[in-house]
View (cartoon, rainbow, N blue to C red):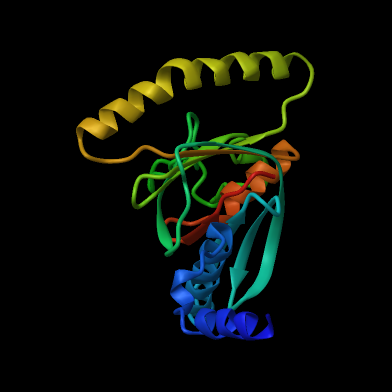
Length: 209
């Protein structure tokens, strides 16, 4: 009996490690860590968004500069990046604008008032578009009647808009992915908009939170 067991153990030892099934989440996490290591060696700040941990972290050289807690997250498609993707643009209905200053048109030549944008000028909801088309929708958690309105709008998007956009993307031989996240407050959303710049690298690790 012991001889049979010894033979089985010996035979299993001959099987290459690649033949053993690995956890998909573990494999994805390993690749994500490898990608972050590359970013951490650079000088630029980057973003790590982990829906499983419920955090969005702005980091530099591996250290957290600022972290936002994700109250809720929802996915359409499979928005995950195993390699860093750059932020192409920040999209919002009413982007913050600084009043245009035209030299020579000031009535008082002795005063020159420059209006600086403040945190309160930042939008309360916006979308981020990454270089391969992944869209990240950022909003604050709704309260009161806003919950009902938000639920209705979300249902409309998922029943009509997202399927249509998925079909159009498929016809163009592309994929359509959306990650919707809610932060704790409007101030947190505004702070995130303020902190992000075009070209910032993103790493997404999407799980159920």
